[in-house]
Image 1 (cartoon, one colour):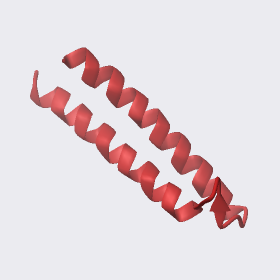
Image 2 (cartoon, helix red, strand yellow):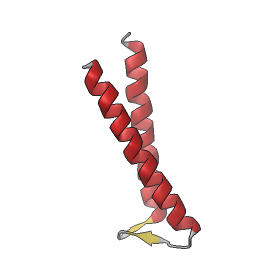
Image 3 (cartoon, rainbow, N blue to C red):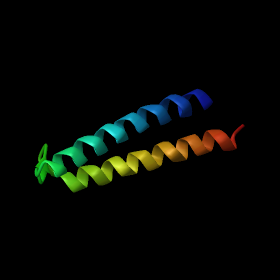
Length: 64
């Protein structure tokens, strides 16, 4: 269970960072839509993934 939280938290963290970075860069470049979605929607989705990764890491700390 601990290994799943470690690896899963890191994977979700990377996806969240990538999505937030791409959506933020696209929005700064003036693109309102990216891959058929509004860039702010993708940014919010990336933020949700970052929150999930933080919760997974917090669960690891609490289980020690």
